[in-house]
Image (cartoon, rainbow, N blue to C red):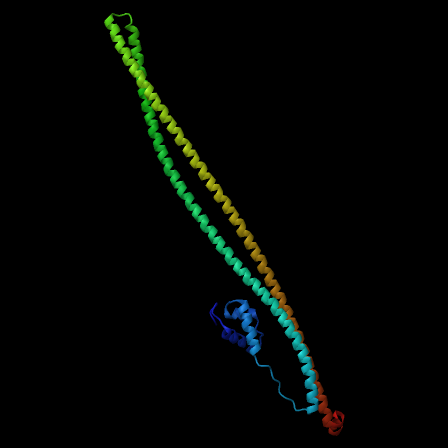
Length: 319
């Protein structure tokens, strides 16, 4: 048996000869099944060459008078020529229809290969986008961790600044209380109060600076929160796009599979119908030829019987 994809004319000839020896008409499907696969168009081409190269069947000659033999041979040849022409015409038409179906099947195989390639490309693109999303999720996780760390540090700094601010306010309160108690004292106490007020003013300036620093830190924290929200929105958008693409890919795949199944079923049904019609016509032609040959044999027997009964009268009748 030839390996699929590497068979040639000799392989098809050998398989067809085996079928002929078994008394079975070699068809394209039977030859393809025994070879183990291959293009139906190629097998059909090789079968046509095999049929054209087969010798015509010969029948044993019957010793009958030459005039009768010529007349009977002419009648049979006319009948055979008419039947053979009809059979060959039907065969050529059926062969053309089958070649058309074979070409359609090969075209469908090419389209399926293109669809499979497209499906593979879409799967690769999907894998690439999933990898990109995984990278974005990883980057988001790392950024969130950095932001959380930065947030914790800022909150710690804010707590320290709040503590310092509270301490300054406490000192300011104490200083103001001391200033209020020292208002009625002597000039020395007034000078001490002045010094204390200067210290209070300095502390107020320090407090104002700390409050500004706190406002800057809060603004930075708000910017970080906004950046985090934007990253999460972008990630959600990418996930939605990937999900829509997955759904579209699934719909296209289901549509392609359904169309392929319907087309294959139609081609199989058409081929089976053509095969049955061809077999019926061959059967009718074989029966017609057998009937003519039986008539010929009967005619020969009648003529031979007449010749045995009265050879002289038979010769006169032929003249």
